Image (cartoon, one colour):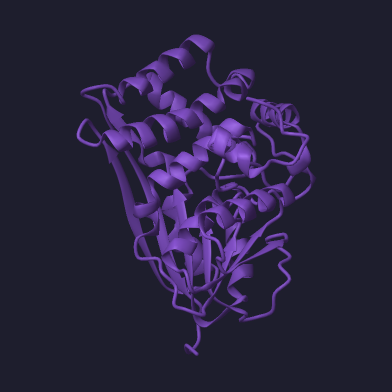
Length: 327
């Protein structure tokens, strides 16, 4: 994986590298400015020792241009699936917590062009790229960009009508606390929409024990940073315990086979398998697999994208309501 860029990214970089992507982690704290090598050393150390890193959150895939491109492929391939049923009324105030470089913001603007979207992230460079990207895709879009920490947002109680949180909670050590803090920003009757994946939902053909072992390595790496790659199954209890009412969770299944070549390429290859190829060095350095076992497992995953192969993954989309009478 390439190192974190010393210069600020530009929209041209995004076009060249397909680096329009959601920054999945809210990069809280000083770790977000560290080099890729430094982040890798921390991941390896904590994986070996079974301990917890000093930082409060960590994004296991790093911030390379290749990872940004992978996330862009994911956002665009799954836009119809993930954003179905999500459209906000004209004039409503919507907070997107953890907007990253704007991959999901683009789709929020497309589905709710007359809503006022406040997109928040802790990374200044990500916000700059997000602003450029959204401006290029939707000139005049009603988006306000703000650098802020998830646990210290500069907004008052009940200031928003809706919240949108996508691929963020899995990287936080205290997702319930984050959700509870966000709830105070909602007006009574306002909604929160949360989307997360669950790596326990993966199955494929041809089946392969080495391939499943590769899939498990991300679960293990993410847990060393106090994240949870299996968080999708927990959305209902997390939102309920955080004080939201009427929580409804829907599974969103991605199934790719020979009749769906767009998903075979856009999801199986470019989103899922590419995600694992990016963490190979971390996995091997941490001793989670041998190089031979890793190579065999990755090769078997690639076979699921060949003729006769199939692949399945489930995302979970939850909607909850802030208690109190709607206004």
